[in-house]
Structure formats: C-alpha cells, structure tokens
Image 1 (tube, rainbow, N blue to C red):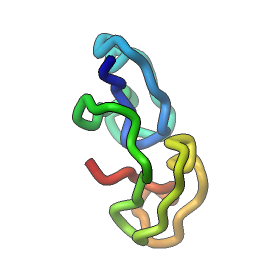
Image 2: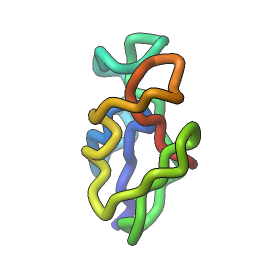
Image 3: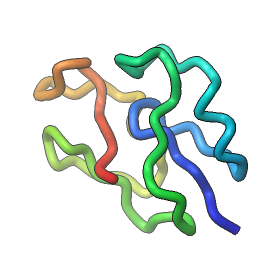
Length: 74
C-alpha cells in the first residue's frame, strides 16, 4: 500500500486527501506531499543532506533551511 508523506513535517497517511489538512511547518500551511511510495529506507533533507530512517525527522531544526526545519527530498 502506498504511503503519502508530507515533505515539511514528515506526517504520513495512506490517503492522499490528508494534503488538505493544515501543516504548521509548511510555507503553504497545508501538507505538501512527496511522491506516493512504499516506506523509504532513508528520508533526506534537501538543504543539509542529513538523513534518518523515520519521516518525523523533518520536524527537527536545520540551520541551512529557510524554514529552519528539515525539508524532505522527494
């Protein structure tokens, strides 16, 4: 089953309509979905290259990001 992941906060859902929900980390204030994939082995930050095995890593601070949190690649 495909999983949708928000690139700004790392929240996940099986339903793409969760993109309509609010996201405090996103510049659009709504979840911005990465491509629907099976669970990834690593989630990587676009700005600093840091990575983690869990998508909630996106909620952590990132000094190189304009939003000051990690933004997931994808």
